[in-house]
Image (cartoon, rainbow, N blue to C red; front, side):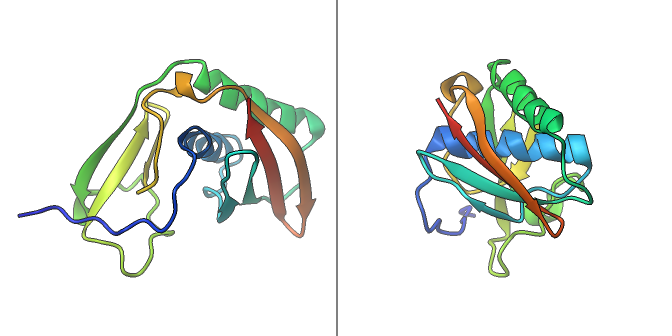
Length: 151
């Protein structure tokens, strides 16, 4: 049997896309919120939106940045494996999968820090990402938008 994944409709910049995975898991751990529901990932700058009950303080925004960089500095391997959709652990959120997602899914692991279903491009080690920097943020009607870059 041949494993068949959905075709991907865009090409991400692997360091930025991998940083997004780390940011998502950091937000889940800090705020108990879902992974970003809306994101735009580009080489020069990116943005992710999170649903939160209250606006984070300036100190909390700085802490998000610090924690993401701490994970990047751990030089974690970024690996993937193909799994049957029915065998995906309950801890992995599949709510963003398109309706026509293949039966076989690719799970991407950032060391022991994050795991999610993803067909995008990633670095092979977090040491390839660079320094994560939140360049601005705003909060409106329960939506936190973080704009960030990597140097």
